[in-house]
Image (cartoon, rainbow, N blue to C red; front, side, top):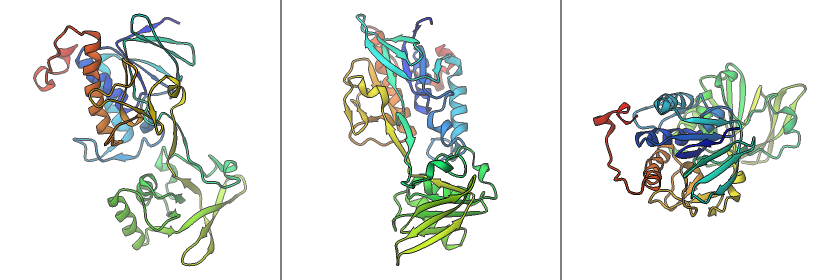
Amino acid sequence: MNKIETDIIIIGAGPVGLFTVFEAGLLKLKCHIIDVLAEPGGQLTEIYPKKPIYDIPGFPSILAGDLISNLMEQIAPFKPGFTLGTRAKKVTKLENGHWQIITDDGQIHEAPNVAIAGGLGCFEPRKPPIPNIQDFENKGIDYIIKDPEKYRDKSVVISGGGDSALDWAIFLADVASKVSLVHRRGEFRGHPDSVQKTIDLAEKGIINLIKYAEVTEINGDETLNAVGISVKKPEVEQLTIETDYFLPLFGLSPKLGPIGEWGLNIEKNAIVVDTLDYSTNQEGIYAIGDINTYPGKLKLILCGFHEATLMVQSAFKRIYPNKNLVLKYTTVQGVNGFD
Protein backbone atom coordinates (compact mmCIF):
# COMPACT_ATOMS: atom_id res chain seq x y z
CA MET A 1 0.00 0.00 0.00
CA ASN A 2 1.14 3.53 -0.75
CA LYS A 3 1.55 5.83 2.23
CA ILE A 4 -1.24 8.42 2.53
CA GLU A 5 0.00 11.92 3.35
CA THR A 6 -2.29 14.82 4.20
CA ASP A 7 -2.63 17.91 6.42
CA ILE A 8 -5.13 16.51 8.92
CA ILE A 9 -5.94 12.88 9.63
CA ILE A 10 -9.49 12.73 10.97
CA ILE A 11 -10.46 9.66 12.97
CA GLY A 12 -14.21 9.29 12.76
CA ALA A 13 -16.54 9.91 9.81
CA GLY A 14 -19.49 11.11 11.88
CA PRO A 15 -21.02 14.59 11.45
CA VAL A 16 -18.25 16.36 13.38
CA GLY A 17 -15.49 14.60 11.46
CA LEU A 18 -17.16 15.44 8.15
CA PHE A 19 -17.69 19.10 9.05
CA THR A 20 -14.00 19.32 9.96
CA VAL A 21 -13.23 18.65 6.29
CA PHE A 22 -15.27 21.70 5.31
CA GLU A 23 -13.65 24.05 7.84
CA ALA A 24 -10.20 22.76 6.93
CA GLY A 25 -10.97 23.13 3.24
CA LEU A 26 -11.73 26.81 3.69
CA LEU A 27 -8.13 27.16 4.87
CA LYS A 28 -6.85 25.06 1.95
CA LEU A 29 -5.94 22.18 4.24
CA LYS A 30 -6.40 18.64 2.96
CA CYS A 31 -8.01 15.93 5.08
CA HIS A 32 -8.15 12.14 5.12
CA ILE A 33 -10.76 10.33 7.23
CA ILE A 34 -10.38 6.94 8.93
CA ASP A 35 -13.44 5.10 10.25
CA VAL A 36 -14.10 1.53 11.34
CA LEU A 37 -17.55 1.62 9.72
CA ALA A 38 -17.92 0.82 6.05
CA GLU A 39 -19.57 4.13 5.11
CA PRO A 40 -19.45 7.72 6.37
CA GLY A 41 -21.94 8.94 8.94
CA GLY A 42 -20.94 7.34 12.21
CA GLN A 43 -23.82 6.70 14.60
CA LEU A 44 -26.20 8.76 12.47
CA THR A 45 -25.84 6.31 9.59
CA GLU A 46 -25.28 3.12 11.57
CA ILE A 47 -27.80 3.51 14.38
CA TYR A 48 -30.60 5.94 13.56
CA PRO A 49 -30.54 7.19 9.95
CA LYS A 50 -34.33 7.71 9.94
CA LYS A 51 -34.49 9.48 13.30
CA PRO A 52 -35.30 13.22 13.18
CA ILE A 53 -32.81 15.66 14.74
CA TYR A 54 -34.19 18.98 15.99
CA ASP A 55 -31.18 21.02 17.16
CA ILE A 56 -29.27 21.62 13.92
CA PRO A 57 -29.35 25.39 13.19
CA GLY A 58 -31.47 26.25 10.16
CA PHE A 59 -33.30 22.90 10.17
CA PRO A 60 -36.43 22.70 12.35
CA SER A 61 -36.18 18.97 11.75
CA ILE A 62 -33.82 16.84 9.66
CA LEU A 63 -33.40 13.08 9.44
CA ALA A 64 -30.01 11.90 10.65
CA GLY A 65 -29.28 10.23 7.33
CA ASP A 66 -30.19 13.38 5.43
CA LEU A 67 -27.84 15.44 7.59
CA ILE A 68 -24.98 13.13 6.62
CA SER A 69 -25.95 13.38 2.93
CA ASN A 70 -25.89 17.18 3.20
CA LEU A 71 -22.50 17.16 4.91
CA MET A 72 -21.07 14.87 2.23
CA GLU A 73 -22.33 17.28 -0.44
CA GLN A 74 -20.88 20.22 1.49
CA ILE A 75 -17.38 18.73 1.68
CA ALA A 76 -17.30 17.29 -1.86
CA PRO A 77 -15.46 20.34 -3.33
CA PHE A 78 -12.53 19.69 -0.98
CA LYS A 79 -12.04 16.07 -2.13
CA PRO A 80 -11.28 14.35 1.21
CA GLY A 81 -9.78 10.87 1.23
CA PHE A 82 -11.37 7.97 3.09
CA THR A 83 -10.02 4.81 4.69
CA LEU A 84 -13.18 2.96 5.75
CA GLY A 85 -13.97 -0.39 7.30
CA THR A 86 -10.79 -0.49 9.38
CA ARG A 87 -9.68 0.85 12.75
CA ALA A 88 -6.93 3.36 13.53
CA LYS A 89 -4.69 1.09 15.58
CA LYS A 90 -1.13 2.36 16.05
CA VAL A 91 0.12 5.96 16.37
CA THR A 92 3.77 7.03 16.23
CA LYS A 93 5.38 10.47 16.60
CA LEU A 94 7.93 10.90 13.81
CA GLU A 95 11.20 12.83 14.00
CA ASN A 96 9.81 15.63 11.82
CA GLY A 97 6.99 16.20 14.32
CA HIS A 98 4.36 14.53 12.15
CA TRP A 99 2.12 11.69 13.28
CA GLN A 100 1.96 8.29 11.64
CA ILE A 101 -1.19 6.22 12.02
CA ILE A 102 -1.43 2.60 10.90
CA THR A 103 -4.84 0.96 10.54
CA ASP A 104 -5.77 -2.67 11.15
CA ASP A 105 -5.32 -3.45 7.46
CA GLY A 106 -1.76 -2.09 7.45
CA GLN A 107 -2.46 1.20 5.67
CA ILE A 108 0.03 3.93 6.69
CA HIS A 109 -1.18 7.53 7.11
CA GLU A 110 0.99 10.55 7.90
CA ALA A 111 0.10 14.14 8.80
CA PRO A 112 1.24 16.97 11.07
CA ASN A 113 -2.21 17.02 12.68
CA VAL A 114 -4.62 14.38 13.93
CA ALA A 115 -8.24 15.15 14.84
CA ILE A 116 -9.98 12.45 16.86
CA ALA A 117 -13.68 12.84 16.12
CA GLY A 118 -14.71 9.32 17.06
CA GLY A 119 -17.99 10.17 18.79
CA LEU A 120 -18.41 7.65 21.58
CA GLY A 121 -15.45 5.67 20.28
CA CYS A 122 -16.14 1.98 19.74
CA PHE A 123 -19.60 1.23 21.02
CA GLU A 124 -21.93 -1.65 21.72
CA PRO A 125 -25.51 -1.66 23.02
CA ARG A 126 -26.22 -2.16 26.70
CA LYS A 127 -28.20 -5.37 26.97
CA PRO A 128 -30.67 -6.29 29.73
CA PRO A 129 -29.69 -9.34 31.85
CA ILE A 130 -32.16 -11.80 30.32
CA PRO A 131 -30.68 -15.33 30.03
CA ASN A 132 -31.87 -16.24 26.52
CA ILE A 133 -31.76 -12.79 24.96
CA GLN A 134 -29.05 -13.73 22.44
CA ASP A 135 -31.28 -16.46 21.01
CA PHE A 136 -33.67 -13.82 19.67
CA GLU A 137 -31.25 -11.13 18.51
CA ASN A 138 -32.28 -10.13 14.97
CA LYS A 139 -35.23 -12.48 15.40
CA GLY A 140 -37.52 -9.99 17.09
CA ILE A 141 -35.00 -8.22 19.33
CA ASP A 142 -33.28 -5.10 18.01
CA TYR A 143 -30.94 -2.87 20.00
CA ILE A 144 -30.68 -0.29 17.22
CA ILE A 145 -33.45 1.08 15.00
CA LYS A 146 -32.23 1.72 11.48
CA ASP A 147 -35.49 1.65 9.51
CA PRO A 148 -38.71 2.35 11.44
CA GLU A 149 -40.76 1.01 8.54
CA LYS A 150 -39.70 -2.44 9.71
CA TYR A 151 -42.19 -2.03 12.54
CA ARG A 152 -45.09 -0.82 10.40
CA ASP A 153 -48.37 -2.32 11.73
CA LYS A 154 -46.45 -4.50 14.19
CA SER A 155 -46.66 -4.76 17.98
CA VAL A 156 -43.59 -3.30 19.68
CA VAL A 157 -42.35 -3.34 23.27
CA ILE A 158 -39.69 -0.76 24.15
CA SER A 159 -37.62 -0.75 27.36
CA GLY A 160 -35.78 2.28 28.66
CA GLY A 161 -36.25 5.68 30.25
CA GLY A 162 -33.86 7.94 28.36
CA ASP A 163 -34.16 10.06 25.24
CA SER A 164 -33.73 7.16 22.81
CA ALA A 165 -36.55 5.09 24.34
CA LEU A 166 -38.87 8.10 24.64
CA ASP A 167 -38.18 9.47 21.15
CA TRP A 168 -38.70 6.12 19.47
CA ALA A 169 -41.85 5.38 21.48
CA ILE A 170 -43.27 8.71 20.28
CA PHE A 171 -42.16 8.15 16.68
CA LEU A 172 -43.34 4.54 16.44
CA ALA A 173 -46.74 5.44 17.89
CA ASP A 174 -47.61 6.55 14.34
CA VAL A 175 -46.01 3.50 12.73
CA ALA A 176 -46.62 0.38 14.84
CA SER A 177 -50.01 -1.13 15.58
CA LYS A 178 -49.22 -1.10 19.30
CA VAL A 179 -46.39 0.44 21.34
CA SER A 180 -45.69 -0.51 24.95
CA LEU A 181 -43.02 1.42 26.87
CA VAL A 182 -41.56 -0.33 29.93
CA HIS A 183 -39.52 1.66 32.45
CA ARG A 184 -38.15 0.46 35.76
CA ARG A 185 -38.64 3.81 37.50
CA GLY A 186 -41.47 6.28 37.91
CA GLU A 187 -39.54 9.24 36.52
CA PHE A 188 -37.84 9.52 33.14
CA ARG A 189 -34.37 10.94 32.48
CA GLY A 190 -35.09 12.21 28.97
CA HIS A 191 -35.78 15.69 27.64
CA PRO A 192 -38.78 17.27 29.46
CA ASP A 193 -40.63 17.84 26.18
CA SER A 194 -40.26 14.18 25.20
CA VAL A 195 -41.36 13.07 28.65
CA GLN A 196 -44.51 15.18 28.42
CA LYS A 197 -45.32 13.95 24.91
CA THR A 198 -44.99 10.35 26.10
CA ILE A 199 -47.26 10.97 29.07
CA ASP A 200 -49.83 12.69 26.84
CA LEU A 201 -49.84 9.76 24.40
CA ALA A 202 -50.20 7.32 27.30
CA GLU A 203 -53.17 9.24 28.71
CA LYS A 204 -54.82 9.09 25.29
CA GLY A 205 -54.24 5.33 25.16
CA ILE A 206 -51.92 5.58 22.16
CA ILE A 207 -48.90 4.27 24.10
CA ASN A 208 -49.16 1.54 26.72
CA LEU A 209 -46.93 2.95 29.48
CA ILE A 210 -45.79 0.49 32.16
CA LYS A 211 -43.69 2.06 34.92
CA TYR A 212 -41.84 0.44 37.84
CA ALA A 213 -41.40 -2.60 35.64
CA GLU A 214 -38.79 -4.62 33.75
CA VAL A 215 -38.87 -7.14 30.92
CA THR A 216 -37.58 -10.32 32.54
CA GLU A 217 -38.59 -13.06 30.10
CA ILE A 218 -38.51 -13.60 26.35
CA ASN A 219 -40.64 -16.24 24.68
CA GLY A 220 -40.94 -17.61 21.17
CA ASP A 221 -40.06 -20.44 18.84
CA GLU A 222 -38.05 -19.42 15.79
CA THR A 223 -38.84 -15.75 16.42
CA LEU A 224 -40.04 -13.65 19.34
CA ASN A 225 -43.76 -13.75 20.10
CA ALA A 226 -44.09 -12.53 23.71
CA VAL A 227 -42.27 -10.92 26.63
CA GLY A 228 -42.76 -11.39 30.34
CA ILE A 229 -42.81 -8.25 32.47
CA SER A 230 -42.31 -7.95 36.20
CA VAL A 231 -44.22 -4.99 37.66
CA LYS A 232 -43.14 -3.94 41.18
CA LYS A 233 -45.66 -1.19 42.03
CA PRO A 234 -48.24 -0.79 43.41
CA GLU A 235 -47.74 -4.50 44.06
CA VAL A 236 -45.65 -7.23 42.47
CA GLU A 237 -47.35 -8.55 39.35
CA GLN A 238 -46.30 -10.63 36.36
CA LEU A 239 -47.56 -9.62 32.92
CA THR A 240 -47.23 -11.25 29.52
CA ILE A 241 -47.49 -9.13 26.38
CA GLU A 242 -47.68 -10.67 22.94
CA THR A 243 -45.42 -8.73 20.62
CA ASP A 244 -43.57 -8.88 17.33
CA TYR A 245 -40.55 -6.90 18.49
CA PHE A 246 -38.73 -6.10 21.73
CA LEU A 247 -36.47 -3.03 21.61
CA PRO A 248 -34.20 -2.64 24.68
CA LEU A 249 -33.00 0.95 24.25
CA PHE A 250 -30.62 1.45 27.18
CA GLY A 251 -28.02 3.39 25.25
CA LEU A 252 -24.52 2.45 24.20
CA SER A 253 -21.53 1.32 26.18
CA PRO A 254 -18.63 3.41 24.85
CA LYS A 255 -15.08 2.12 24.58
CA LEU A 256 -12.10 4.10 23.34
CA GLY A 257 -10.46 1.04 21.81
CA PRO A 258 -6.82 1.46 20.67
CA ILE A 259 -7.07 5.26 21.12
CA GLY A 260 -7.02 4.66 24.86
CA GLU A 261 -3.43 3.43 24.51
CA TRP A 262 -2.08 6.50 22.69
CA GLY A 263 -0.78 8.29 25.79
CA LEU A 264 -3.66 10.77 25.92
CA ASN A 265 -5.12 12.12 29.14
CA ILE A 266 -8.32 10.13 29.69
CA GLU A 267 -11.09 10.98 32.14
CA LYS A 268 -14.21 8.83 32.43
CA ASN A 269 -13.64 7.24 29.03
CA ALA A 270 -13.25 10.62 27.30
CA ILE A 271 -10.20 12.58 26.12
CA VAL A 272 -9.29 15.68 28.11
CA VAL A 273 -8.75 18.76 25.93
CA ASP A 274 -7.83 22.44 26.19
CA THR A 275 -10.82 24.54 25.12
CA LEU A 276 -8.52 27.09 23.49
CA ASP A 277 -8.22 24.81 20.45
CA TYR A 278 -9.37 21.35 21.68
CA SER A 279 -5.80 20.09 21.73
CA THR A 280 -4.79 17.10 23.83
CA ASN A 281 -1.64 16.60 25.90
CA GLN A 282 0.02 15.28 22.73
CA GLU A 283 1.03 18.20 20.50
CA GLY A 284 -0.66 17.94 17.13
CA ILE A 285 -3.44 15.61 18.31
CA TYR A 286 -6.87 17.14 18.90
CA ALA A 287 -10.15 15.65 20.10
CA ILE A 288 -13.50 17.07 19.04
CA GLY A 289 -17.13 16.03 19.45
CA ASP A 290 -18.54 13.52 21.93
CA ILE A 291 -15.18 11.82 22.49
CA ASN A 292 -13.67 14.79 24.37
CA THR A 293 -14.30 16.24 27.82
CA TYR A 294 -13.79 19.61 29.50
CA PRO A 295 -15.65 21.69 32.12
CA GLY A 296 -19.13 22.49 30.83
CA LYS A 297 -18.97 19.94 27.99
CA LEU A 298 -22.27 19.35 26.16
CA LYS A 299 -22.53 16.33 23.88
CA LEU A 300 -24.35 18.03 21.01
CA ILE A 301 -23.56 17.89 17.31
CA LEU A 302 -23.60 21.69 17.04
CA CYS A 303 -21.02 21.93 19.85
CA GLY A 304 -18.81 19.53 17.91
CA PHE A 305 -19.11 21.78 14.86
CA HIS A 306 -17.86 24.72 16.95
CA GLU A 307 -14.96 22.67 18.31
CA ALA A 308 -13.97 21.61 14.79
CA THR A 309 -13.92 25.22 13.62
CA LEU A 310 -11.47 26.31 16.32
CA MET A 311 -9.40 23.16 15.98
CA VAL A 312 -8.59 23.67 12.29
CA GLN A 313 -7.40 27.21 13.01
CA SER A 314 -4.83 25.74 15.39
CA ALA A 315 -3.90 23.00 12.90
CA PHE A 316 -3.25 25.65 10.24
CA LYS A 317 -0.89 27.55 12.56
CA ARG A 318 1.07 24.35 13.27
CA ILE A 319 1.66 23.85 9.54
CA TYR A 320 2.22 27.52 8.67
CA PRO A 321 3.56 29.20 11.84
CA ASN A 322 4.71 32.29 9.95
CA LYS A 323 1.50 32.94 8.02
CA ASN A 324 -1.13 35.36 9.25
CA LEU A 325 -4.49 33.65 9.32
CA VAL A 326 -7.26 36.10 8.46
CA LEU A 327 -10.86 34.98 8.88
CA LYS A 328 -12.72 35.34 5.58
CA TYR A 329 -16.47 34.99 5.63
CA THR A 330 -17.96 32.57 3.11
CA THR A 331 -20.74 35.12 2.52
CA VAL A 332 -18.07 37.42 1.05
CA GLN A 333 -15.71 35.04 -0.74
CA GLY A 334 -17.90 31.99 -1.13
CA VAL A 335 -16.58 28.45 -1.00
CA ASN A 336 -15.08 28.08 -4.46
CA GLY A 337 -12.84 31.07 -3.75
CA PHE A 338 -10.98 28.94 -1.22
CA ASP A 339 -10.19 26.11 -3.61
